[in-house]
Length: 218
Ligand SMILES: N[C@@H](CCC(=O)N[C@@H](CS)C(=O)NCC(=O)O)C(=O)O
Image 1: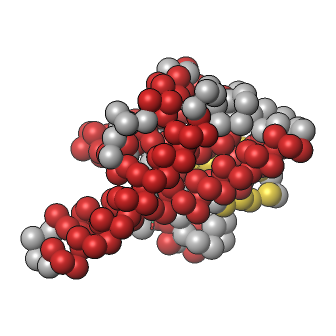
Image 2 (image 1 turned 180 degrees about the vertical axis):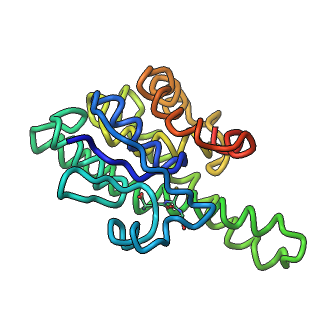
């Protein structure tokens, strides 16, 4: 049965399209337009009670949270997720690190940057959180730098751990101060960006968006 991916072309959606392309799996896209509020429909909440993309349905199994989807696909195919326990738990550690650290911190930089840009906001109200979340994102870039120094990928071979962190680095490098001070991170970013499956994964669903949104989500 073909996998059904509930999706909008954002970086959390791209984690899954990249993995699906890398693994050579067939899938259908169910576009959930998060700008129109499709993610809060009863039909979608039955699949993901958290009301966010991505979600994946495989027959009678439905999965939400991008890292849980990556782990599921890794188990299903035996690809990009080591079978051997020592490496698999290391991959899990980086996945949890991304989901609890890099994603939320960099996401808060986005929120407070937008809030700070609004003329009616008191700068004092946004400057402290912006400072805090930028510093923390920069620290997390440093953690990746340390993990990648002397290594091509985070856990030996290229894996779902790399995919999950990569989309955040690719889309918002400026949130951690840019990649210039992180040479190992910068070359890892380039190495993954040049993979054909990554290029394909980033393009999925673009044709379904208006030109204005295509520019925003490129
Ligand atoms: N931790 C979740 C985050 C999912 C998430 O934040 N999705 C965003 C798009 S990138 C979304 O659906 N936003 C719509 C909303 O917040 O209503 C995951 O990794 O799957």
